[in-house]
Amino acid sequence: MIEKIQQQLNKYQWDATLVVAVSGGVDSVVLLHALRQHLPKAKLIVAHVNYHLREESDGDAAFVQALAKKYEATFESIDWLDIPEKAIESQARTLRYNFFKQLTRKYQTQTVVVAHHGDDQAETVLLKLIRGGKLSQLTGMHVYNQQVVRPFLSITKQEIISYAQQYQLSWREDFTNSDTSYTPRNYLRHEILPAFKKINPEAVAHINDFAQQLQRQNDLIAEQTKIYVQTISHDWTKIPERWLEPAIVDFIQQQGVYRLKQAQIMQIMQLLKNQQKPVGRLQLSKNIEFVKEYQQLYVKNATEMTITSQVLSPIMLKLNQWQIFANYAVKWTDSKPDNDVASFSFKLAKPVPHLYLRPVATSDKLALIDGHKKLRRLAIDEKLSIAERQDMMVLTTTDDIIVAVKIRDHWRVSAEFTSKQDAKLNLNWLAWRIEEK
Image 1: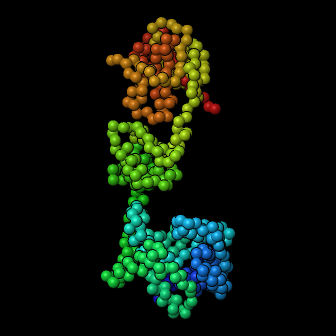
Image 2: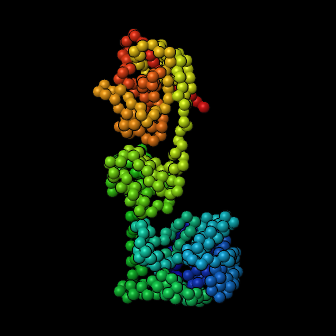
């Protein structure tokens, strides 16, 4: 048994300084002893949390402090004075790991060692299975999780006790751990797992092996998902259907939205599969929206999306004069522009003193060869995003008849003003260039 634990510790490259979580129970006492045996010159920081939930709490703290002195380790402790009435277990965990993180900064180390073992792992997997949740949660605890290392996950509780007995170690007993009504985990520990072991003595090992298999499969899924996420915002329709959901979830999490409910995921998938709704939005939180615009996907701040461009006033274009509109310099001219600017040509039925440039209006229509089309409909046909629609502008006559409409980076000329480059009568151009600000 001693050799098995030592072999387990041999698998890791240990830092010169380690924060070791020690409650005073047999698991953490064995962990501290084994680490000191294995790393006689390491600087060990014994971290203890006094929760003050039991009368024996102060005695536990004194015991761990004495233990730290015995093993020539630095003792650090914290008292939980503001004990909540609800969710005690989860808030205690938050307190504990925040404390460990503070110690890693104080002692400039990247390693926190905790004594979770194989039985703890089996309990965790069963709890996740019973309570329901995502497949990834059934992988249980990880040996490495950021700064936390769990070297005993392949060691059973009985093997830890045997090690303690062989070295004649003493430890503190938390009698609340024996109360099956105290927590669901206690019930699993004292009622369910012993029943499983009667069916098969290797039940714990098999549950943990199953969790490891799931972890390997989950890692493969994660690797492939990241490949699809690289292109998801540009054209999500190229992703195979079976990979779409995990890719969407990973994409949204990369945008900083981590608390995504299963119901929201289902709504997103329904939106993507709805071919009758090529553009749509879903509220993910108070300020965050998921946006589908044809083949493109976005996760945006909803308050920012409502004001994405400034409201521009129409400007009057005078012949052969450069003027500023939005971030463009534009000029209406009757002379062919130089090649260093972008331009398009159009004809006028009769000479006019000026033209107008303005943002698109809801009622605007463009003349086509076979009739007229609303620009709102044209934007849908062109699959313009919301930002691209807000960037549309039109060139009009004095009577507000549309000469051309800007769609993305090009202009589409009305059928009534289409010109031929060899035409001589009233041939005009609109030239433009982007103005740097």
